[in-house]
Length: 75
Image (cartoon, rainbow, N blue to C red):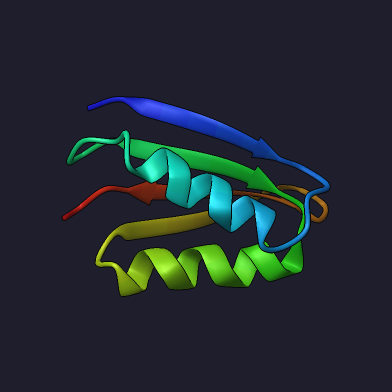
């Protein structure tokens, strides 16, 4: 299991989601991708996409209006 990070601070949709989807191709089962965002759109779209694909998702607000989304590749 490995951990990967993407910085998408101040980026608007769909850029953060596209970064996640592109990086996703390189991940193995059990890997965790952490994406740091400030976009409300990405806060909605990224977890929605990951859950729909069957992955585990957690969201943590690390400071005001800054979130880390943790996605564990489950399938």
